[in-house]
Length: 339
Ligand code: CP3
Image 1 (cartoon, rainbow, N blue to C red):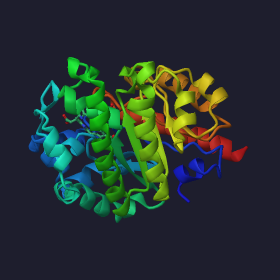
Image 2 (image 1 turned 45 degrees about the vertical axis):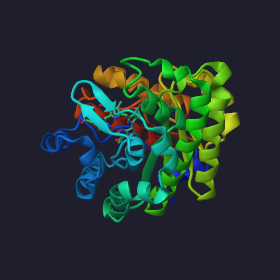
Image 3 (image 1 turned 90 degrees about the vertical axis):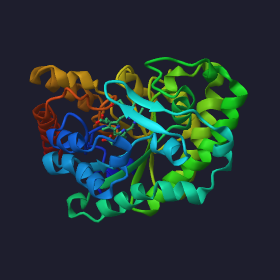
Image 4 (image 1 turned 30 degrees about the horizontal axis):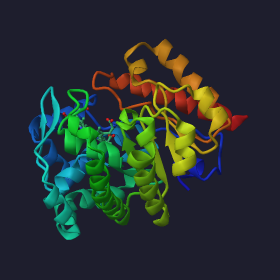
């Protein structure tokens, strides 16, 4: 069994495996080199040879316990025919949404458009570099994908009024769910060992809408993933009540963000936990990194825990600080295996 699966299935509570969200990304010089020659981000995500190389870059450099497929949560709107561009220093910009096209989209056409993603997963899975490691596939949470589709850019930039149209949201979520489930199924069929659901904008939803906008659609997706005998990690960033979320949705693992107090999590949640540390800590100094890494490791010492961050690695992070972080986590593991 892989180290991460041992944690998920509670076979070993002292072992603390590690991987990082955005471990393949702009902080890595070897990624930037490829990116400079591939200006179209979507096209890059549809190039299996390059995707394989990028996915394995952090494994080669750091030997993390898992690889996450290099792709994006916005590949699903792309598969549904919405145009997308990643504008430099701005972020994603989506074209207008045609509801009829989405409702009438054939699963076969969706699958065909995203087939290079599935071929990439198949190719990465064959690599010896990830023997005894997990390959993580992922989707955006239904709510977060809907936010990008309707808002057409990051909510950090602006928040359109359309996001208060409740009947439209509930109608659209049903269609999005169908394709998210299909996307998960094809990723698993081609070799994804674990699925992570990134609900980056879960924190925008008001309490009174949580059940309809987040809980119900996400629960359905988690259940479907579990019927494929594949564990599901949920990351509902900035959600107010992690305990209610876990009790309702029942994922295999909950990834916490950096605003939540890890002590309240360890005391109130009894499923495996992942992540938590603020990625900005990695921009400071070794002393601070050591203090916070040991803080998270000691809090979750006797709880099934996968080391990760409370959001993705920031582009300004020094690759040597990541190396240092790995050294600390590995040292902790060595010490606890001797005791
Ligand atoms: O984690 C990994 O290493 C796997 C690959 C991955 C990417 N995006 C690659 C990427 C994953 C898991 C994602 C998820 C994703 N994408 C999320 C959820 C997690 C989160 O960050 O909240 C979201 C909201 C997106 C949408 C997205 N993609 C945005 C808003 C942006 C632009 C802002 C940014 O961070 O650059 C992207 C682009 C993107 N996705 C990059 C990478 C490596 C940067 C591309 C570049 O300019 O080189």
